[in-house]
Image 1 (cartoon, rainbow, N blue to C red):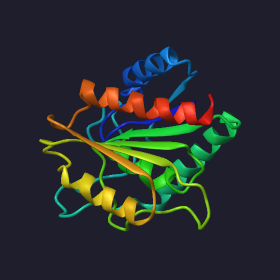
Image 2: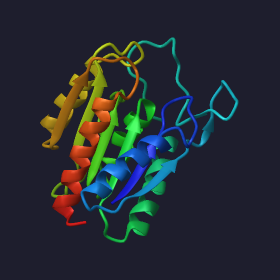
Image 3: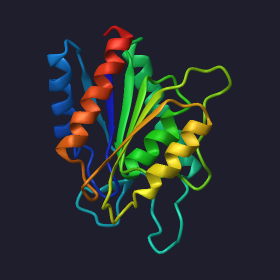
Image 4: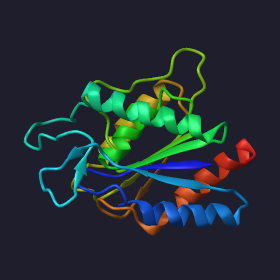
Length: 201
């Protein structure tokens, strides 16, 4: 499996590297080989200090933000390159917060095996779905019940949209805030383990 990690708003490219290493170790125990790739957002975050963003956020604007076409297309091209390099091995895209929103935005219409969105949110223009008869990835949505940054209602909206489109989706909510607890890592490992087993890799 090729596991692609998309960090959150204001983080750095290697922010999720420890998570990727933990998941790779868990999957190796199940006999699955995993290549972890941490993709860094293209734009400098206003905070500086190496922080990055997939696109600027207007924190004073009500409602969910929308993803600029340039950001979506740039990430889509990068994911397509990763798919080419994978050479048939299953590809999973895992994102946190803004990275979770971007994982669904750019990967849902690509032939990836799985998408994990942790504390992600829906974009204002809705999901960009695969063309008719294209294979659908399996999706895992994870969220903290007490998240003050991205309210847990975001998970409900995403789940409804995905199920309405026929996308296989699983969800889990944890007693935490805007973070990735150990229980979420367990859920990711189980989910990705099933994906690798189904792919025979």
